Image (cartoon, rainbow, N blue to C red; front, top):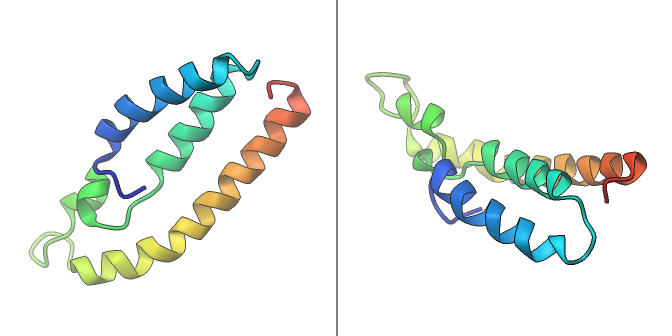
Length: 96
């Protein structure tokens, strides 16, 4: 989650994890959706997500990098919960 911007991380992680899990018999759709969700909603630093970066300066959005980090760290726990719920859902639907 600390690798960098959303687009760069998705471009590296999704193909690698799909290739890695395809030999295990896991649906590439389930893996891609879980990785997409985890990467798309995470941020710790403002440059991790473009929507957060746009309002980072006090002139544009009124919040600082410190405030962004204070919200981003607890959000990491939420991301793990979201991925666990997705994994359970894909297990129920038979994709995993």
